[in-house]
Image (cartoon, rainbow, N blue to C red; front, side):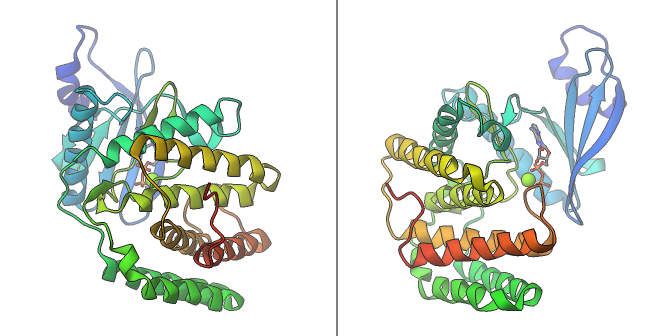
Length: 317
Ligand SMILES: Nc1ncnc2c1ncn2[C@@H]1O[C@H](COP(=O)(O)OP(=O)(O)O)[C@@H](O)[C@H]1O
Ligand SMILES: [Mg+2]
C-alpha cells in the first residue's frame, strides 16, 4: 500500500519524506459491497481513506463524482465541502481520498453551535441541488415502489404486529407515485443524514454512492426523518432536535426558495419505512438497537411515516 500511495500522493508532494503506511484499520463495511479502510502514515500520523468496491464500475463512478464536486467547490462554491479525492487504484478496486475535517453532525448537533450547523448543512444541500452535477442515473419510481414493498415485508416478517403499518405506507406511496416522480432532474445525494455530514466553519458531506437525479425534497425529507430517529433514540432531546429540524428547513428555504408541498411528506414517509427496514435488519446508523428498543424504534418510525401522510408533518413551519 505504501508503494501505491506514493504514486497517488506524488502530485501533492511537498518535498518531505515519502509516505509510509504504518497502520490500516477497517472502519466500516457494507457487507458484500464496499469496505472503508483508514491508513495511518508515519511521521505526523496523517490519515488517508480507501474505499474498496466489489463493483469496480461503481467505485470509478463515485471517483468521478468526487472529482467533479471537488473542482466545482474550488471554483466558487466553498460551502460545498467534499473529501479531497486522491485517485482510483484499479488493481484494488479502491477509491482513495482524504478524511474531511470537523465533527460528525450526529455528535455536534447536541452542542450550543447546533443551529449554525443546521444552516451549514442546509447551505451544502442547496449548493448541491443547484450545482448542475452531471449524472447518468435517475430516481426510478417503479424501482422505488418495489423497494418499498420489499421493505414492508421485511418489517412484517420481523414484527407481525407492525405489518399493517408498513404495508399502509407502501400502498399509500404507490397511490401517490406521481408525487414521488414529479421532479426528476436535479442532483440529489439520496443518503443525506446526520452521520454523513461533518461540520466546522462549513459542512462537508461524504458517501456519494447513492447520488442520482431526482427531487430535492427527497434529501430534505430523508435528513428530517433521520433527525426523527435521533429524537426517538434520545427522547429528552426530541424537542431540541425538532427545533433544529425547523431551522434546517427554514435555512434551506431561504437559500433555495423552497416551499413545503405534498412531495415532502411522501419522501418523509418513504424514509421512515427505509429506516424501519434498517432497524429490523440491524443495519443503518449506529448505535443499532436490540430487543425491545429495536421494536420501539421501528414502531415509532412507522407511526411518524403514517402521520406525515395523514398531514401530521414534522416541522412544516
Ligand atoms: N472523508 C471522510 N472523512 C471522515 N470520515 C469518513 C470519510 N469517509 C468515510 N468516513 C467514515 O467512514 C464511514 C463509512 O464511509 P461511507 O462512505 O459512508 O461508507 P458506506 O458507503 O459503506 O456507508 C463513515 O460513516 C465515516 O465514519
Ligand atoms: Mg455511509
